[in-house]
Length: 497
Ligand code: ADP
Image 1 (cartoon, rainbow, N blue to C red):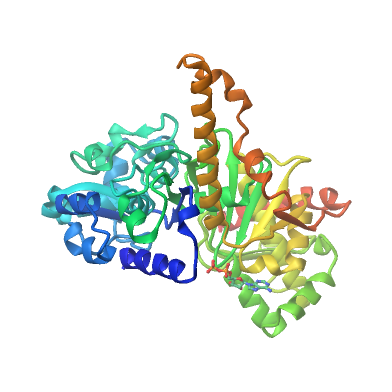
Image 2: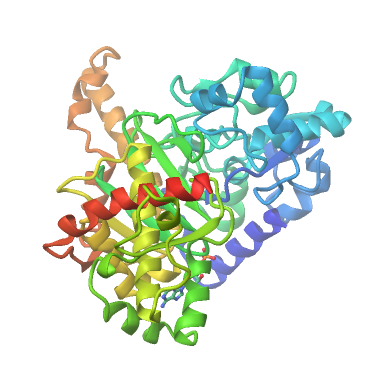
């Protein structure tokens, strides 16, 4: 299905008159965690594609040893997670090595399940790709390396040493390293396009391929986020993405190798009780009308007269608990009766403001715990369905005491793929011209200070990619700093309940 999709997309591009002969470099973004298992025959086919035939006729079922590709929605590998963590000395060690505890959807546990339950298929597998490196492989006409970013979503990669962790590989399946190949930094040129695409679609023979990566990583590159930017995605679930200089010690959440800053990490936090809870309040308190919801939200003052709420309707990830707690200004953790708060606030507008402020205080607290430093340069970049809602964005701006921006373009992950491709080409051409000038490998790196970093390079071409939507109110620090403390007390009370 995926291979056929490439046939269809490229055919449509040609039919719409796209001049593929002008393409200099191709980058890509794909869903994280899924894995594909190449047969020997499949690898041979990939290296010898016939341009007179469709891709899907050639890279068909026989190219793979497993025909139902495990993807991120497969949560059936809890057993393998427990085994892998136990084998390397526990969960904390897994987090320390790979940046995440073992998750059922991650590639390592998925591979282990195939090794255990379909050992013949595993034996017959010559290479394993993740979805992004699979897509790159098709364009390359050979097995493409997995990039550091997507490698970080496998529970197999040592994110500090930037190589496969022998311990994790051993805990997963035998002879795995030879099947995975050597990973590469995300912005690496990995070769030239396969002759198939030159002959069939008119790409230039010199067209390069850069490493492809996972969608969250690519979205961060597409936002061209600065070091102090916090990306907040308000889609079906809420997600925070941030740059981190150091690896935090958090059991939950994910730390991945940063897609564009070689020595940094990307922190990713998911919140279960995001849009779905906002939607249910919109239904019950505002008849399902976001306009009405916003009027109610805007009619209440910052701080909500001390009324605060935590709504974890489904079990939350951090803190790992379910429950609802509403506090008035008089509630207190010191007295068990008072700590229970109240059942309901007196008006819909109080309910709505307490919900939105509570959600954002929760996010601010967890982002700080992950190691994000809030300061005068902090910027919030909002995306996803709810980022059209200016009233919610104003609360975010106030609670985080930072301006909120949105991107002018949607599809950040796709733009990220294109920007990274172009940046890789730039870095490569700089290195080539340096080596021509110096003719000496030792001096080649001397000029690396002249190399623009990813952010500065890309923003030359898109100077106004962000649009300022809200700025924090003057009194917000005074109001929300004490409320952040109260949020922590409330979370503690819920945890004890
Ligand atoms: P996905 O993560 O599936 O791509 P979207 O980014 O499209 O989802 O976001 C969908 C969410 O956006 C829905 O849960 C919906 O409640 C929310 N949403 C859409 N419009 C608004 C709005 N005006 N105000 C607040 N939330 C909104």
